[in-house]
Length: 430
View 1 (spheres, rainbow, N blue to C red):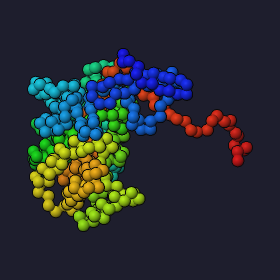
View 2 (view 1 turned 90 degrees about the horizontal axis):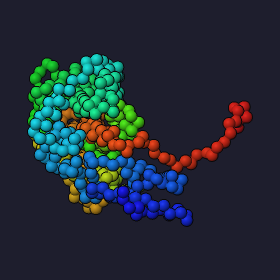
View 3 (view 1 turned 90 degrees about the vertical axis):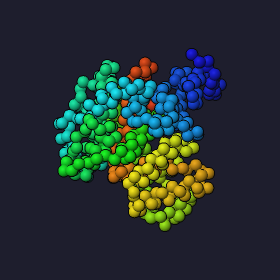
View 4 (view 1 turned 135 degrees about the horizontal axis):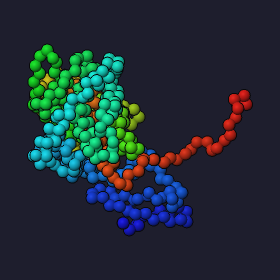
């Protein structure tokens, strides 16, 4: 037990609290006894100064531009590893040996198919349904098909559910895409790696052979790694909160997908592409740069700066390189939108206004450009984010379920409504 070395004075009353130290990062004041001791709650809109849990999975230092998965820098994992190795790391806490990785890859690969009856779900959606709407519905429906992995008290069932979601999410995401564009579903192939299999399911058609470009597959894999987890963000907190009630893992992940759909969260890369479309051409960039600098203009450059990273987003450095690799491989030279993006990137990295305010291009800016170049429509961007983030959600959910101190989430409030008042019959109301 830590010494009580934090004090809160309210009127003439002093209240002492433990200060808990993490491995790295800020210490926290344990205020769990505050209400019992003082009859008061803390007020922290958005919980931006509140640690909601203890975790060993992901660490972010926004001031230094650091992102660690289980202690490993994101740059090392993205440059030297692959996505399924990263999945193993997030789930189990250590990088796998070769034998462990081979076994894990095998288990994921042979869970990629979904129950054939699930394909009928898609015909129930309107043809113009947003792919994220389809994702929320179909992922939640997994619990209706896989009853043997919904008992969260059983470690084996938790493991099976985890593998199933990592394996089946690319298949569901590809089916959402195929349904949206009106093409037949393409079954997964066990002879392809994770990213290649996903690209094949998205872009292959039955009438001709489709070969996955290894450069594009590597880019896709790297995008998955960079989005795999990001500490206690809105969607991860949603998964944990849903899971704290004892909800089954498929329902919890569906809740995370619903939260991720918000434009302030997972929709940011889609918003960045929408902004580039609004700018339209390179010669209009100066006009929008001036608008971005005008504090009285509501226009904001999407894909620049980050709520957490006050330095350069470490994921953006990797994504920048990946973006240029993809554009170079595809030889794209006549896309006005990408021309705007590249010029905007150049200006933002050199303009004193953006440099001083640290409004660097973030991962959403680069991933949006890359996904567009790969051939995905903008409404699929958040779906791909959800696919990648699934492993992070599962790791966080699993950690939460296995934490003996975990209780059902119950945020408090500052009530500012009416005091108690009496019911008035309708004929006496004015």
